Image 1 (cartoon, rainbow, N blue to C red):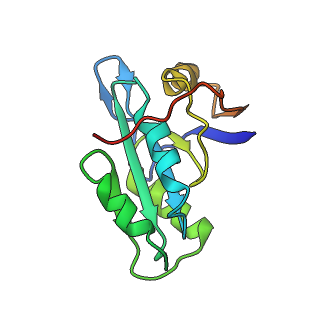
Image 2: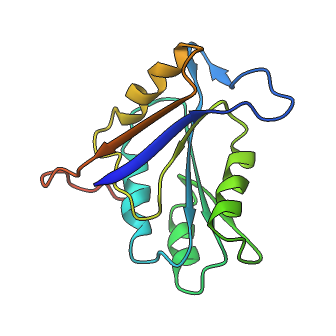
Length: 152
């Protein structure tokens, strides 16, 4: 079982999210620490999304394993950030929030494969059209038949 949270965030000085046409930009933030063995699944899950205005941020919190090497393999498709020192989970997540610069965010843990269905982000994002909605949460289970995507 995996948990995800999407939230509507307006950075300091912002007046709403970036938009490209009628769809807002959604940023998937993936904080990571010593996740060399799991991070590919989370990244592949995010890359499977068919939402057109998607940005993916993966933040390595000064891992001591091969996490940064794995993230660099995805650098053509994902914005990868390496911290010069270990910030801890909360500060690393907050750094991703600050870097997102968008009103609509989706937080995914380093070992999640919660975005199994390619329209997951699109379904979560549609709730933010309602200004009364501030956060969307969900749980899901990976389908045994869901084949992981991989970087070409």
